[in-house]
Image (cartoon, rainbow, N blue to C red; front, side, top):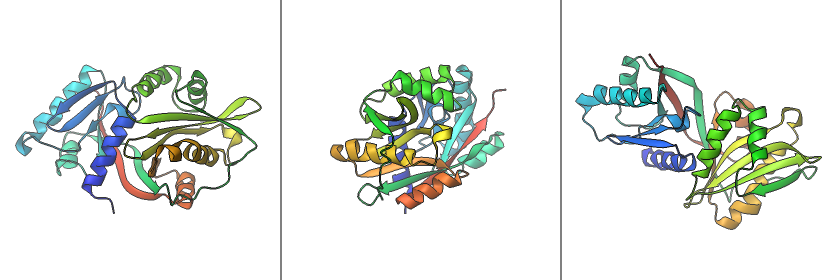
Length: 260
């Protein structure tokens, strides 16, 4: 069972694996700013609170002013544990509303992960940096356009202490899938940007890329734990990861206050 210190630890790894452009620290809260691209990189992480409870309203207002300065809505990341304990009640009093659905953080021991067969009908290539072909593929088949991808390209370059690798799957020399793996010094491998071209899905490309990056790169570099995030409404992905041996560590969601 994951406790509050475990949640704090994984949230810290997440911030290092997805480094924002600017940071501001407010009584233990970590405010992140990255030109509005992804809620993760543009939200408050309330891992701990060192302020006074009778000044919580004031601190919420200060956070809002900080995001308004960047012309961004104010978003709080709300995991299963946060500080102070009455934060959600206060945010709702300040007219915050839930943004999107709940996301599960799933975790699996590298030793116990049920690694299957790699689909050898496709070719797999591992890179140490985010090649342009990867950005172009993601912008074409995801909700993020080219301008957003440029911001994310800069974000990825800021991943320095964790090791990173990018894997693509090809069919007839054309990209049909991509995945990013970020290995923390503690041995936690974070899986992100997993995407397969729509007409190539259900051919085990996603799991093949996952197995490939684990067996060819993460295991030789000391991986101990694999973790990723899945929206609760994505039943197919949840079922797949459960079959592979992943279990829920904790959940989180976002509370947002739009610009006025």
